[in-house]
Structure formats: C-alpha cells, structure tokens
Image 1 (cartoon, rainbow, N blue to C red):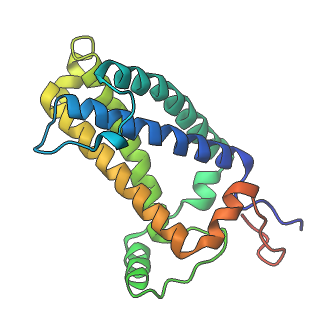
Image 2: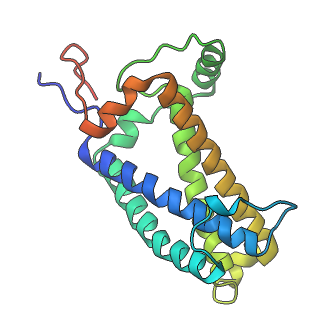
Length: 204
C-alpha cells in the first residue's frame, strides 16, 4: 500500500493562510483594543497593526474575510475528506487525562503524523473558539442589526469581553502549538512538504 501524505495540501494551505491571517488579526485587534481598553493595560505599539483606529479596523475587517473563507474551506474539507473523523476523533476524558499526565511528565511519545488525545481536544476547542470569536465579532460590528446576538452575548460591552477572551484562548493555543513545535521540531517539515507516513503505518 502506497504511503499517504501526513498533511494533505488543503490542510497545509489553510494552516499557513490561517497563520498569516491570525497574526494580522491579533495585531490589528490590539490596536483597536488600545483605542478603548477593556482592562488596565495596553499592547505595545510595535506589536500593533494599522497605525491608528481607522487603519486597524480596515485591516481587521479585510483579514476577517480571509479567515472566515479559509475556515469554511478547512471545515468542509475536514468533513468530506473524513479528516476530522480519521485524525481528530475519538476524544475521551480517559485518553485526555492519560496523555496530559504523560505530557506533564515529559513522557508522551510522539507518533509521527498522529495526534494524541490532548492535541485532538485542543484542536476542537480552538475550532469552538473560532466560532465564538466570529459570533462575538458580529455582535460588536453590528450591534443593532444583530441585536439578538448581542443580547445573547450579554450586550455590547460583554460581547467585547467575550471577543477578547476568545482571542486570548486562541492566542494561548498558538503559544502551546509553537512550544510543541520547538520541542519536537521534526513536526514542522511535514507541514511544509506534506511528508509521508511509512509504509508500515499504512494510514494517515
């Protein structure tokens, strides 16, 4: 049986577009935050994008469409190619607990091209945060047109906080994701080239 790609090209393409888009969204979002801080801090100017509130909003909305379309492509691919079922399921509390304990003890074995239970849970959680950040973003963007959604979020001010928390959760995922890449650098190349499973594995 011919070995298959670890990461098919649609997964790689959406991954890198997402990386570029999320960087722009974080930086433009921080500029927007600085214009009207929710909390008693602001982000360094050097880490923001847009230069001023209007410029940051323009960047934010432009890149938003890229991420929404990119996300829809990934979800549709994940469903129709069985990527979700094959690579991100099942996720059981027992397996998550087992792999989390092993990871904390630095004893978690990395199987090339396979996600452990903690990774699977993290991917599902970040997808959920992606949905939440879009919904809260709509409530902030058009609080009158989407007044039911804004009310569901607890009002405009609360929707801003929900948006910030979802952003922070996605940011935490990115930090952990990058840390894992640094700890296991051999996982980076397959995300660029696609890589291949060994013939002995015979699965993706």
